[in-house]
Length: 215
Picture 1 (tube, rainbow, N blue to C red):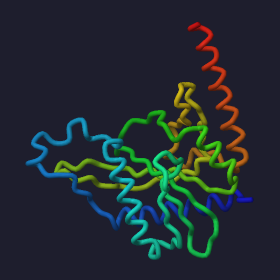
Picture 2: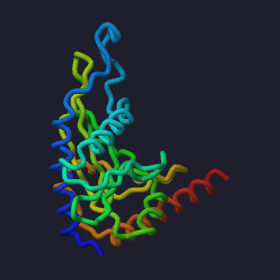
Picture 3: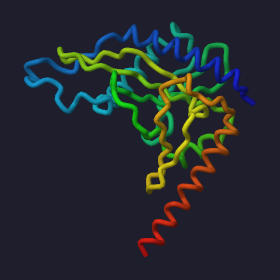
């Protein structure tokens, strides 16, 4: 059994090490002014560079894992997994999984997709001790066609203060408060799984009611 205190320690460790990683990566060039004569335009969004950012984070974690205090850095083998990378801290056998997100510096607060609820249910049902963290890298789009990663916010997914499952067919867990650890509700994975399954049932009933109205 993993305690809330252990989750909190892992969260602090990840926050420190991922922000150290951010500093080592530095600015990321996407192009130049000749290639982008009108600048970023509509491309100046976090989701535009998410896959590039994910790959940069993964590759640099692998290269610098020893310096950052990780004994294992293993990218997810699946494109549809609820996590991007599995980690283990040196001399610590807790399995840590990170889900890499990007956010625009100064952007609006929205209810964003976190992961598919059914995937999270399966993930924790397989091993309730797993520690899954949402790692949000805040990016700024430089006028010289660089992307600057400003910092990384880390939130245990089980501590999300707002657990909501979209009743649409994709059934995504959504949250608007996943960037601020000060808003976290400290839960065990077991408590989170119960709340998630309750929200999945609410979403299911909403879908049924909507279908009845349309029939």
